[in-house]
Image (cartoon, rainbow over all chains, first blue to last red; front, top):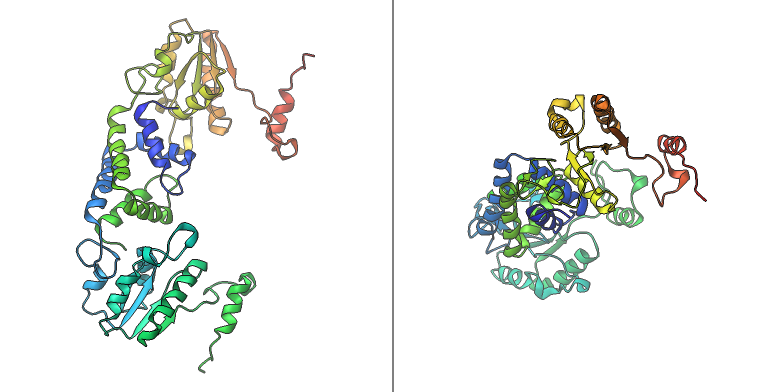
Length: 199
Length: 199
């Protein structure tokens, strides 16, 4: 539809997740009218990110050196490992300031329909870390959906013989939410996981 | 939240129109996991587009040389100019294959709230083109919203002394639409613009 480079740009933008043809066109025109310095910064960081960003050799979180910021932090305990699917889950948990242990990023969840089995995830590397004997608790913080639950169950069975404490994040009502709008599975989980009030 | 280049990438993506913080994060992770060749192509075209893409010296449509594809096309008439707001409107009209004249891209519409007056649009350049005397009809194809209507009215008054035919695209019911779902302004326009059926 457009000449040369404009069409190439629209095509390349349209390949990004969540960017449809209309959005791609809108972003392309924004770029055409934008300050060249802004566009150069975006082009530069795209080139830089693939070179500079690596994955932590211990936990597979995003890192800019051999180890990520969490693994390098000597104040964080080696006795608890929190297993998550993606690096963005590490960021979400770090935001809570509730966790002072280490992470292990699986790189996804078991999903047979998409061809992701245990071998495609960093489960072997997790097993190697657990063999050190330092770890006392494994928190399974995969997503509370079908794939995440399946992955958590698989891992729980796998590490059971090692005799360490295996926990899963609590399911229940979101804080600030309305009971009447909770779906029945969440409400059911909130019931079965109810706690005694210490008053 | 993230280290170095990843955060820079999320920040730069978040500046694009229609890309919020969550989308920016999702696109950034997609890029981290993508084939380096794909990412290089996107970075390259971003650099290329600002150098290669210019605006046609005659009609201000997107061009890769001094003149755009439409202005270079000798088979297209010089007697009708279709005035649009943006280059993407040219593409939309070209898709209909209904128009065989030339275009004039204003670069926007009159919008006092955003500080866009007649001087910020390519109206002076349009007047210069009309002085050639070749143009017999001016089609005002600005958007059918407040700013587009205001721009069309402004242009119609401005060119009135030149005595050429000034037309506006028909407003009415979208083809394939449902009468009951049309808003009252559109339905009103469809009534006032009703045509005799030649049967």
